[in-house]
Image 1 (cartoon, helix red, strand yellow):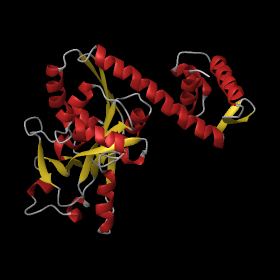
Image 2 (image 1 turned 60 degrees about the horizontal axis):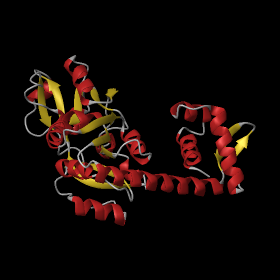
Image 3 (image 1 turned 120 degrees about the horizontal axis):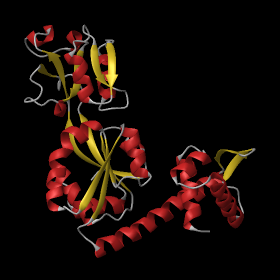
Image 4 (image 1 turned 45 degrees about the horizontal axis):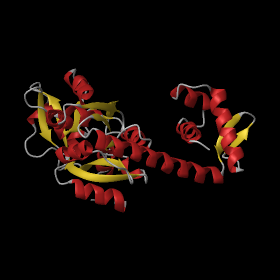
Length: 312
């Protein structure tokens, strides 16, 4: 048994049991991966995968246990490498962050600017995706940490740290009828207009749907997008009114819009930072976390990782 076999096993599962896709991702050949998996099964004396002809259809019950053990083993090997890097070159390395567009565009720039000033030798890599993709990238070790609002708590492999809460605002073009609203905006008023907002996987969309449903209203959502900048583009074209995260409105840049508060209409959302359980974190990862969410010092983060708590 060797580490390569364990990596191949995890890669096959991570690519939906498609050996060809796993081989392409690992820059190796499909026959080579298949041979290594057969050797692993022979050494263990059990079948890891259920097969139909040459096609893998599922993990066997024993295979599920083997997979979980393989992931833990690879995680600990990764920890050993990070420990060595930490003591060999404390202020250099790579910080990989998986996050959504909203976080990358509106929340991270100042944090990463401060981080770069403190750690100029650390290369930062941002992977953007929807919340589920952010969680999967973090679970599989393709990112050191994930930042998103939804989905992170659905993955038991992750410890999630609640960082801050936020709500939404409505953006309309200057001169729009809603811009003349006196008093607080209502859901009934919103429901009379075409709405442009986030895709179902993003940024509190479930809270938006739930608020309308609770009032017996059906919002006329004419367009959904993956990020606030795209939503603004179509609002500007007059295709509808936009519902976006409050953080996505920038008074200096968004002078063509009227911002209407919607915090009283929708339940607040919580942005979380996710880390793999029992992970050894480089010092600069701790430093980034402290910059992004100052309430989490090194002791608080380590306690959460060791204790497995999802609420620190």
